[in-house]
Length: 234
Ligand SMILES: Nc1ncnc2c1ncn2[C@@H]1O[C@H](COP(=O)(O)OP(=O)(O)OP(=O)(O)O)[C@@H](O)[C@H]1O
Ligand SMILES: [Mg+2]
Image 1 (cartoon, rainbow, N blue to C red):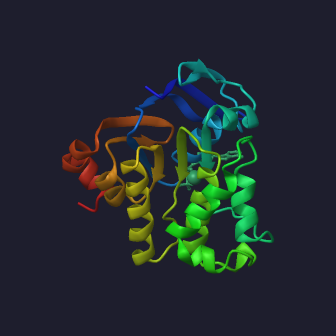
Image 2 (image 1 turned 90 degrees about the horizontal axis):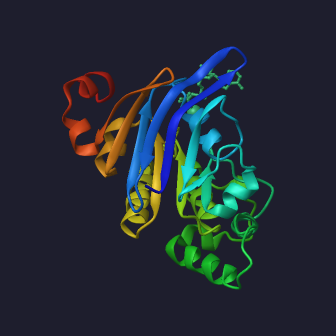
């Protein structure tokens, strides 16, 4: 397993947002975590990234216990996060956003990687010197994903990348995530869009108010009656 989350409990004051949850992310796979508003999805990602600290349980990444490791050290170990709500640095140009994503790197291939992303996303290339706040929502999502990839992570965490986008753009974003997985990237994808996430995922988990209530292959979850009823519109 590339990532193991074991019996993780995270509290805000007296309230437990995660109640002893466990899940695994296998190397090379796309794992999705599905859940409604307030279920605890972002809390989990923030805890994996070191932004929040658990009261109990642990997180093992690549064989190493990273529980309570500082965020920048976690990025250096190979975990990159695309936060909820597409947080581009709006007053920086597209080029500067990409460059910022490489802050942990010391190799000399940063410019080469930026050019490769520009080849893949011509809309970003055309506007490379424009402020990224001027991009559409879909373009900002592409930029945030590329910025996270600029760290050359071993594990990519995506927090609701489809949120608030038009349906056609949502499909585009899911296609890109699938393409990334097919190229070998290990991904933990958090989504409320259960159907589309499970369609491209290898493994899925369902979280309800701080508890994992199901975990299986994505194909099995898509067939499950209870999942269909609660998350796939019957
Ligand atoms: N800073 C905070 N202080 C107190 N409670 C919080 C805080 N952040 C989140 N919570 C609570 O913790 C629970 C889990 O929140 P979380 O943001 O992890 O959910 P989520 O699954 O990401 O939801 P959404 O789909 O709306 O993004 C919710 O009940 C939320 O109100
Ligand atoms: Mg959230």
